[in-house]
Length: 170
Image (cartoon, rainbow, N blue to C red):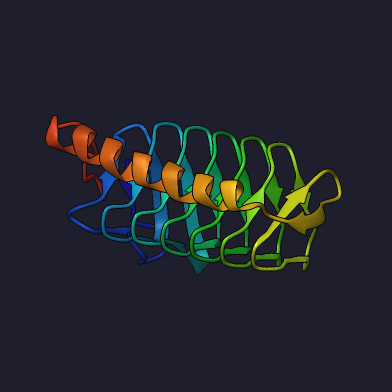
C-alpha cells in the first residue's frame, strides 16, 4: 500500500516490484528493478527513504529516513533508521543500523548485529556483534553479496511478470 503524507508521495519505478502487502508512506523513492517484499514498512518524512536500483528489502524490514544504494540486500526483519547503506552491501537478518550510521560499499552487516549511532563500517568489511565490531571480508563473502542481489533481481522480475505486486493507492 502506498500513501501520501504531508504532500509527499512514494515514487516507484515501473520496473520495480513492490508487494501489495508492503507499506510505503510519504517521501519514498524505489529505483529500477528494486524489490520491496511483504510486510516491509518504508516511512519517509523529513528525509527521503531511498531504495537504489536492484536493491531488495526483504520481509518484516523497517526503513525510516534511510538511504540504500544500488545492489543492496536488506535481510528479513532488519531495521535501518536514518542511516546510509552504500552500494553492493548486505544487511543481515534481524540486524539494526542506527541513526547517522554509514555502511560503506561492499560490506556485510551480519545477522543480529547492531551498527551503533554514527558508526561507520569501512568498505570491504563485515560488521558483527552488539555493538558491531569489524573485520575484512573474504573473497567468498564479497561474491555472496553479488549472488544474493542477483538472485533477488531475478525473483522480483518473476513476481512482477506473474502480475503480483503493488496496488497504487496513494
